[in-house]
Length: 556
Image (cartoon, rainbow, N blue to C red; front, side, top):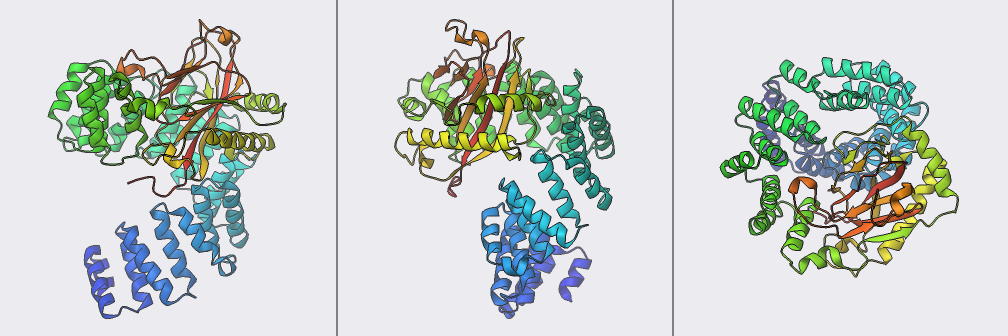
């Protein structure tokens, strides 16, 4: 009763304090432990909530709701493998419980196990056909896997929960996937106008406007900011969208204005420094960095980039060491370290990226006709694709969603063949090295994280030099290559691995330049910047993906 009274007075901290005192006096009271867990979840403290729910579950093992609430607390921490392992032990009791099925489906979905997620969402909907979360979750799975019924699934989800902006966004994506760009644009505009602070909606509208050839594809962010001037997340997202398509000077101005509007938000000073430096306004960036009080790793990482532009290698390495305090295995930090070490002729550069076997170019281990069949299918997908926001692509199109999540037989066959080739790559790597950001994972379990196809069609299309900071291995699988790529002098459409990004202004050649060949796969550490050289005619089509490690000690 005292806890309820505290909650009625919006005193969550007081309610948690009462629960803590009560648990000390009654340590074996499962219901009280469960209540303490619920209070911790309300306070956005999932770690404490998990401990309380686990205690309740141990005291009354037969109580399924205690186990399910424990699973939710683990989900809030991103511990989806633990959730599945725990719920699998409860499957006999849980299979007939809609909440069990829905919770389990979500964890499978978050791990990219979409087949299993679909099965559990289907189980939930068999038990309760109008279950809101299961309807939405299953519609999302249909969209990700390219299922023909994705659009009607979102309509059904909206019939149960018509006020959910995320479901409306899913419908817009489904319309776009079905080829109804006009309908998708209409829904996207409605979402952006009615929910200005819903940033995924703003991003999708920018994507649609970019695909339609709108030069001012991001102007609606300013409209959203005018409607919600107290929300700093809107200008922050506006900066990211502009910077992602080489509009760094515009991004710097948005950041400067936001810096005035939100003087206590340290992010905007850093953002202005980063984008003005990228735009070539070195003095402006220098003035801001010199006055920054921001001590976050992201500040040190970005200032290291700034110092590299001025070739101040000593300062750059010192800043990268500071950045590594946040996460010693951060891919972006290692990528810049590799550049610093190469420029300073440090032998660690060869250790990081120069060892034999780190960069490989392998033939796909698959049936002879797989490339031909896959090429035809991928061209169909690209017919309804566009240039993405915030990616390395400059021109051309990129498939939507995660390619290897699709249920098409040809994509499943291609994914299996690539998986087999990756194992060949792993076998050719140098020996395991616990100090190396890739080789420490040599014997870990690997899986795909993200996959897509890119089609460039000449006219100077290319990938700007970039990294994929969430993976350990990056890739390029070739299906179609430009006719003039065989010219060793022109090197049209070649993959350059290890060339720094252009905004750094460094005259450093690639570690390796790879001539593309159909049916071949380039694999290399994600700590290597990579991009393509422009080409002026014909077509270039690839499939790319990231490989991640399932080793649980990835972060320090």
